[in-house]
Length: 311
Ligand code: NAP
Image 1 (tube, rainbow, N blue to C red):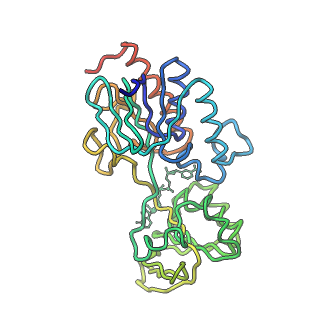
Image 2 (image 1 turned 135 degrees about the horizontal axis):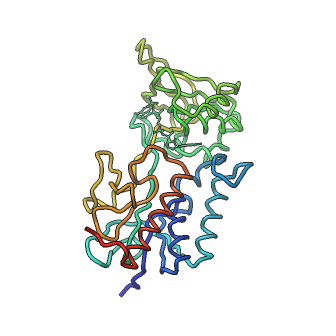
Image 3 (image 1 turned 30 degrees about the horizontal axis):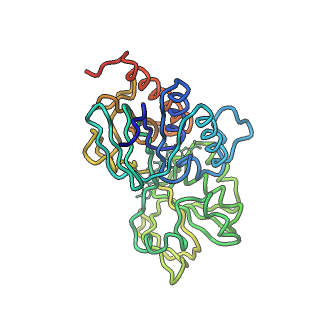
């Protein structure tokens, strides 16, 4: 029989690690289940400069490891497993992973979100051979090369600037005539001589033999198409929630984000809460994920101590 934890937190990003810090510090037996490495998306971010307390900014991996260290210091356990399915309806929640089964009296779903795929010809074929969703991970492979970044919001424009540390030329391909990213991020990109921007343009195919050599783009206003030489394609076109393992166990919105009360992050099921990018929210930041983690942990504490009763 597996040990029954007080709370299991699915996901070890900023939301999950913050929740675990709070519940462990409140002396609840806390297990964090993480599929890969601590930090989630922030661990794939080169430089986080809008998280308070680090005036010079902080490397995303280092920030993640600090959060992990702090949670473990108060007794949170962290295990690495990929969750396949869950049974959340009863008083004891059962979590099935590839490596084992885990049980707890309360659960916080903090499984985050993953990069959305473009869905164009060549994308799947060249993942790891020129197509990437993580400039921090793969950018250094493109020293002196030409890369294309797809997208026009914070991630695309910020990571395009980061890629200029290595690449000779970075071309942002954006489907509209205006970037959506935060002004300070846009200002830096516009001032960078290595960055050029193709507005009103969509990327339609990725070509190469063993690795990427070019991409096909189309101007959506003129319909003109062209093939441009490229050694790498970095895709930053938004996120999809990591909720496949939940299947039909919790109510979700049309995009698969888990619905929860804004007041206490409770879901439709007693003892089940959500935190971070896995829920619908208007502003996805490390700071807002951390806030979610603290709130969900507080709600778990109230639930476990019997202060709140589920209606
Ligand atoms: P996002 O904000 O959802 O933006 C997605 C971008 O991709 C938009 O520019 C969108 O175009 C474009 N796009 C979407 N689908 C597309 C498609 N099929 N083909 C071509 N382009 C497509 O995604 P994100 O930049 O990954 O950011 C995710 C969240 O993290 C956001 O909340 C963001 O603010 C946050 N974030 C914050 C920071 C920071 O604060 N420094 C850094 C990174 C990320 P349109 O503009 O035309 O819609």
